[in-house]
Length: 305
Ligand code: 5GP
Image (tube, rainbow, N blue to C red):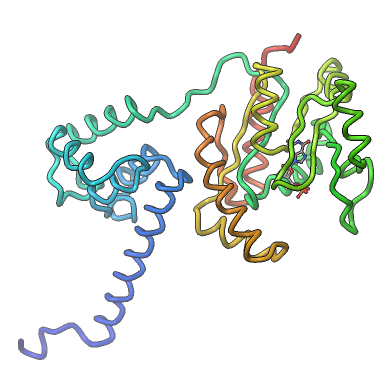
């Protein structure tokens, strides 16, 4: 090659750095689909909106195998059935292929549609370290008209926590009494350690007075509330990516390695349950995630009775 036709060394280094960054971004996105942080349909929306993005430049083969329950054999059958070449990138799919792939996914892995007739009882759940507590605290600070439920727990208070404000701190015997008297709307042992429960009376009172009520609880509790109050509105808080969730858990430094690994395993299971929820909100930024939750809350609601 004539020297003048070769890109300067610095350009080649920059280009190879860019290629490495793009590969990393695609790998991270694939992890997000496999851990269900991002739905396959959401990846398609991103790819079609910007074919040069990590979603758009991902090979359709890689996209399909990142979806839980699709292995290589199934992937190849899908590609043949939809008449898509394995070398295609998602952003480069034609109009017919986009339509057929979209239909295929919607048939097998439908995205949940919000259920009609939601009530003013809002349940905010989501995986460990996603920032549920921070979002709930932000909402309470900026929207005092929303009643944030105060749970009972057998966990000892942290130094900054106030009894009756952050939690009602009770011992095991008292917690047993609360359960036995039917005073709790739901209760669960969280992270295999302490018990947590939602006192029923303050919620019923706030709802009767026309207030919106927000519960920040774990997945087991969310399921129990749905059982007891089928009209409850379930909101699932998602991390922006799986890597970010791991970072947040490591960053807060409150768990040792073993406990972190255990919580991440639980997080995977919890993420798999997100389709049981009416709405999903990505906690990229606390203020905007809180705003999104409040907007759901302020949407016209059916009175509870
Ligand atoms: P923490 O001990 O860090 O305050 O809370 C631990 C976990 O317990 C969080 O995931 C939180 O959502 C959950 N939690 C807090 N209150 C309740 C409750 O009343 N019921 C249930 N099921 N979970 C709760």
